Image (tube, rainbow, N blue to C red; front, top):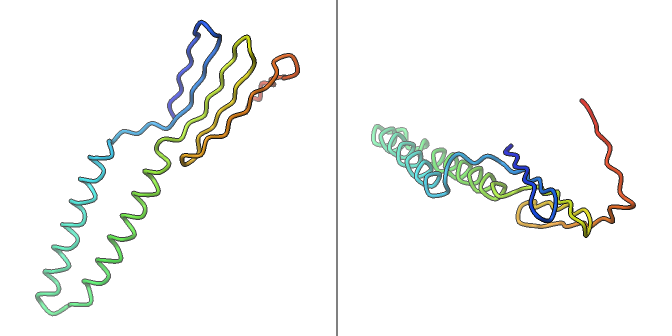
Length: 115
């Protein structure tokens, strides 16, 4: 998780988001390379008569592509807390859906929770 806290003119701003160390283009390149290696090995086995390896290699690559897709959908998730004169804003982005809650600072209490 990556945390960024800033104090701006409007007050306090805290953003918590995932640390994505690879770009989507590079991730696609890794997937393509894995597919080439897997299908290359499967084709070699098929050439020597073990043809049932090919469908399993296809299933393996579909599962890997699905895992990369699910991971990519969640890469942009974040949580944000902003405190300004107008109120307290709590915003959460979960798989592209944004939930925003604006709270009255006079009626809101924050409790510190230690683990």
